[in-house]
Structures are given as C-alpha cells and as structure tokens.
Image (cartoon, rainbow, N blue to C red; front, top):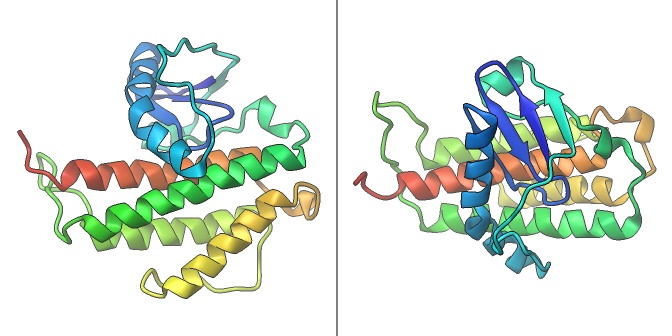
Length: 214
C-alpha cells in the first residue's frame, strides 16, 4: 500500500485492491481506518469472486509515501503512485475490472435499499441519496475522459441503460491496457483505484447515514 500525505489529511491506499482506501488526519489514523474497513471491503471482493486476505490481521507494508496536493486536503486521493506506471498485464486488468464491477454492484444495491432522505451531519449538511447518485455518475463521466474516452454525453443518473453503457466503456478501456495510452491522463491501475474508491466511499456514506445516529 502507499500513503498520500497532505497538510490536513493522509490517504492510505492498497495498491492492488481498488477501492480499499481510507483517510485520516495522520498516517496512523489513516492506516487504522484502512484496517477497520477490511470487513466492508471483503463484501466487494466476495462479489467479484476474488480471494481477499485483508481480514486476517492485516500488516501493511508502505511501499511509497507521496506528497499530497490540494485535492488530498479537499478529501480525495489525487496523486498517482509510481507503481501505477508499470506495465499492466491482461490478467491483472481483468482482476481490477472484476473488482470495479463488483463495487458498482455494491453501490447499486445500497441505492436500492436506502431511504431517499439521509441523516444530516452535525451542521445539517450532506447530500441526500439521489443527489449522491447524480454526483457519482457525473464524476464517472469526468473519469471516463481521463481514460481517453470521448464521443458520448454525460448520462443522467436516471437513465440506467446509458449509465451502464458508460461503465462498460470504462471497463473496456481498463481492459485494453495499451490502446490510447498516450491519450490517457490516468494510467489504468490508478483509474480503477480512484473510481472504485469514489463510488465505495459514497456507498458506505449512504449506508452510515441511512441509520439514526446513536
């Protein structure tokens, strides 16, 4: 895994597990948060039929420490680790896409069973369910362009067929590890991790805000 260290926030992200990425105010808190989300992340890998050993007393090996930027401090990982520039094999690409598709499935199921109005934060803030779904779809349209995909418009979240087509295009771009490489702003490994982190972060947020505060 690697650490992305901003001035206000640190992200701890597993290099080979798209979406298993959490943050904290310090390196220690970020690592603690990553470990505590292992059980929730295991539901994703189970859906992808990929063996996950992160529940067995995970011991994290920090491969790289990155200097964060304004995006990091804003609340999202925003720096590409050196590992992501290495050549991606077809087998590895298939594994990453399987996990990403499983993460999309987790989000879809959370949206189906969650109330439209979510519990607000301590200051009354926070998007409701449908607004979060709109935000995720809009972000994925921007991510698609980072992968060199052009020629289609941003779909409304309500158009499930168009959203599915966009996600299929993203998956195909990740599977095609060589084509359009020069057009990509994001290498495939980073794109899979960043997209999965964003949608799972919001899926887990919806779950947490669907229940009354204790």
